[in-house]
Length: 378
Ligand SMILES: Cc1ncc(COP(=O)(O)O)c(C=O)c1O
Image (cartoon, rainbow, N blue to C red):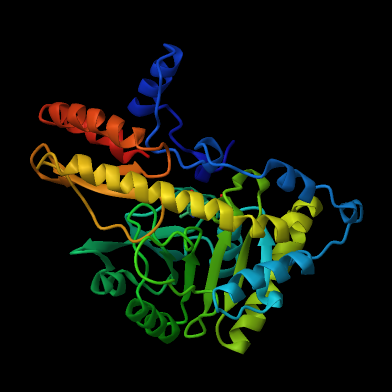
């Protein structure tokens, strides 16, 4: 009686079983893949956050498909601080970046239409696409002294059903930004074929090297949807506040905004207290981001110090975000494997615990090919 799209294999995999057994035995656990900032020991101004939710204006219901003007102006202000001009009328508030993805998928794609997605990248996009009946087609990222888009493969992957290209900027877990020249190439590919760019920028503010990378939010070189939100920017995933911005030619944008408005109006999903608190939550980002960036830099330095003591593993270049990707010797001697390692989880302890797990991993990997799932599953 159920839809085929929900016919998922929900049986726990070996990693979840091992994790459950470990937890059930009451053993200590330091999760190197943790990405929930509220569990990583950062300091939040709890009273300011809760006070922001006590706005008496929340007693009135003002249904607006795009979200409250005051909140959208605050989001436009966030981009103005980055020297990017984003009109507040081009912004839709959503409860999460995931919800923003679903609005975009619904706006662009009929069932079975395709979107190109980087590989490797953020695994949740697969489920979001599944639920919306969208087919994802992967385009590879190449690592050669830094990550870059394989444009040849990307163009080969385009079919008459391709509606757009997803970029994660910076990507999770590779931590690389889309470079200006790559943005220009994406613009020419997408504008020539009436495809959209869908840019996920949840980690945009966490640049570790170089200057401030440009956002896609003001990109007018191709139809563009830019997604971001407070879960990473201010470290407040529990507040469920995110947004979606349309940019491109005036004519395209007008049509995109009108269609999005119908979708958003059907849900009106963002609650009033959170919308009213968005200006304050955005303001809190500075204190949060300072802590994350200093933690990530410290953990990277500790990781590098540990890696320097051996020759088997190396760290790939990371430009931004909260993850490091390591190159380790090939499992079953076929190809190198790249486990992901969370950088904001613990202060230095992570790197020490990592060393133990990596030693264990290397010892086991000579005998057990399946063991790569242990690291790949995060
Ligand atoms: C690249 C990327 N996009 C989107 C999200 C989800 O963001 P949200 O909590 O706003 O749905 C995450 C969460 O980890 C992420 O890593």
